[in-house]
Image (cartoon, rainbow, N blue to C red; front, side, top):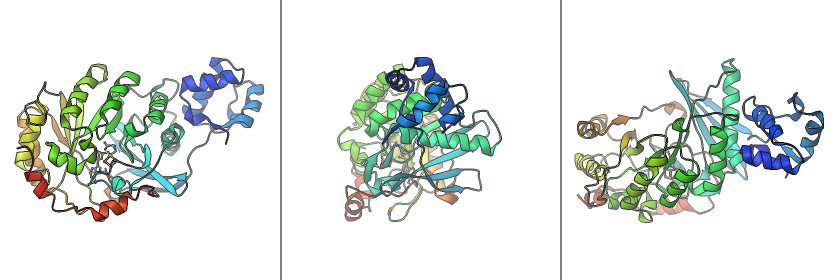
Length: 382
Ligand code: SAH
Ligand code: SF4
């Protein structure tokens, strides 16, 4: 297969052009045509030397992802299902707000982490996306939306790696994709407006802070190791003490001076007053799970979005409010995430795509006892 130019960050494209005997500024021109203008055909790139325009089609292409479906919510949210071949499909979601446009992007077909409350996790893992497949979601959405809104201005101001997959478990493809998003010749996103969300792959959090620091969201979901082992199985490998220490190490290079902790509110599982208190102790470094400096953070409570066979329920509104109040009163800025696009199953954790499970995780999940998790919750380190 010929090279896909969506796979390259600017450095990679310059190296590719050099191999063709072309100067770096040609790579910049090409990069801008692709990402800033949304061009997919070399013949449209009118200011490229004719010789180059004629040379390129033989050696490379700009290969986007076929769109299998597009759904629009009554609140303006748009969800696309992209075909990534081999019977796999991934999703991306555009969430318009007054002051910004956010695109939520997938990094893998499926996910190997297997969190209890996540529809992607229940499906198992098929494969990593390439850098080009990650970028293609933004490339398509941005230029589709510009056409839709009849504008040449940028529509997507924020990108969150919160779709399907664990981005840090696809690190090699993730970093070039992030660079394309950040590049002034590409999408020119600010580092503060590009968020990588992770379930806590500790060594790669360290590498990200060196290679390409972006805003970081860490999916916490539990205030003690016993409960987190159960909800986010990766915790058995990187328990809370290591995770909190990695958060602290990330911050000096990060574009923001806090970590965003995500916490999915599950009825009777992790939403009780004692969990709020344990969470507070954890953040302050005064919990049995982690003792050390307090971690500067904001907390984002996500009401659980149900999906078939999860065996879990969303916390009642009052429990969410009470939980948030404990944290807010203690000075931890805590917000409750608004659910967007739930009429098209575009909310957090509902992105199921269509993944051929290569690990039989779905079957394993079904065999494992899902409820009652309450028992585990009370065996925590209170
Ligand atoms: N794998 C990464 C990013 C993708 S998930 C991670 O786990 O951080 C993005 C966010 O959605 C995570 O915080 C995840 O825990 C949350 N999430 C997953 N399933 C959910 C569900 N059913 N309801 C609400 N939030 C969910
Ligand atoms: Fe994977 Fe994130 Fe879902 Fe966990 S929540 S299974 S890490 S996508």
